[in-house]
Length: 582
View (cartoon, rainbow, N blue to C red):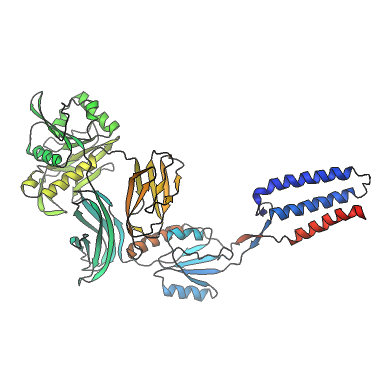
């Protein structure tokens, strides 16, 4: 009973109770002083009744009442008419509702005892409307089209972007084309069978900016089926401080240093001339100092590129300094391949290689271009982060060591790509390798979103990590977005916003407006297959784990009429007022 008793003005409860008790005590003391005590106890009872009624009038009690229940079927996109007819035949009085996104469809005063959902399901951000209700998800529409998509929206200029996905129920002859902002086809794939198939498209990014690419779907007769946009942001390379160590001058180093210098990187090249004597070259540097391989010196570099022989010949103190710089300062180390490649880096990390006797290869991204490599490849490992691979054989990869990374490659004589006129391929090969391994600058703010496809007028959940105290996030329209601090990580904040327009949008930090996160917003009419697939998967996950509720009684709290309390109060206080006068 006590649990079911509540009041509208519940926050006043103890104030009202204490005040009523004090009034009753004053009344009791006053009546005790009267010479005629024949009706003392009656007056005390009536006073308590009057004060209790007055207290209820002030607090406004709520009573628990049972809600009328019924069964409901909710129709969403792609629902099966036969399933609907079957449900209606077995439940003659069932209510049918057409679901609309972002609209309330559950009456809080008349909740259904059972809800059946047909079709692809309701949007995940509307799940809250079905909390504590008995829901059965009966929809299982077969999706057709692109149902999975994976790509990194932000890319460094010169890199190759890879767009991977899954195409459900593909038809033979159907094709997917990656189209540039200028409506030029960049890459494509044609499905050879009727089945669900993975796909991968790629293109090199050569110009900085925010772009809208498209994935075009066409049938075997080249008729357009779908055109869906993807946003790709191309950012400039960070200027790095790079140290190149060679046992002797090589053509590989000659072309590599020219490429890095043209990119604006600060470059120090040390080549061994004779035992104990070195030749130094400097590019884009004002201060020219020798390299003693101490930890203090290595702190000035973002990346060390070293050939395998020089790496093996490092002294014990030099190895120790290098390891500390990697672990503590985030230095990147890239080891170039040669004939003494195997078994030389285990003192830093456990790279394992396997001989394959293959020295010439072609890569999927450039099938007509030949590459030279050592006769081996890297063995897969859960700690190994692949950068380049061919036929599932890893050729270039890195491993994390403390704050930094160690990288290894089986490629040899990459300068021959330039000699053969494949400059862009050479640049991509080295750009992606360097970006993956070099020291990462810790940003003031790091932004994260859970989805690469963001829709207009739908919730965008994001996270930001920063050491700024009480950060404030602003939308594209400079509206303040509330942030919630993570309970376990004081530097992690979570927020949610609803993009109002399509195209490129931004989030920024009020304390520092230079800290901007840019993201691409898609219209809700696009990516229908992807959206349908994700909605169906979310509904299956949400309602398959929901516990069935049998004959559950739904209740609500409603204000109790105060007429009776007023009547009791008037009668009680009226008697107490009239009694002395009679």
